[in-house]
Length: 227
Image (cartoon, rainbow, N blue to C red; front, side, top):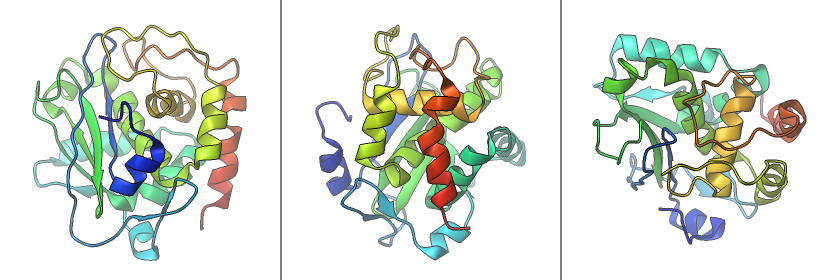
């Protein structure tokens, strides 16, 4: 759980825990050691260094991700704006996608976690292939937003972006939905999907007055990524 932890503490532990949940669900976390190898190298500004080998890879899919699952995950990513696509492309080689057993995370339909070797995104495939199929885009992009935040967004930029998100949204029963990390991931998904975000998605974090203006620092960050 990120509650009570500073960004520096989380970075020192090379640990990311975050989740996309419905507004009525509890948010829970896990930590997971990833594949061997020191892929994640923390920087002083709160980001991580990404090597050329990791940058050249795309998402890794676990053996329980079917061809159909892979198709809708990649379709969700294909819907994001070009700037968000560039940021996701910078980090996706660090990410393995796997299944999240239904009900195992207190109602979460997606969960991001990490260890020294990289990151994992686990998705509740049962529900996302059934009653929550309409939430696929938001779930996938929200979780990738956590990875973008942890790997690419500096402490200074995160503070600026958080200041641009109105306070006082309806958190429902979600835990930590008012943390900067969750506010970022929620708003990142709205920005990346150009506001195409279903009413049932996210934490009820209020939309910035201008989602385009809010995302300008991310657009500049996208331009700075290696081509």
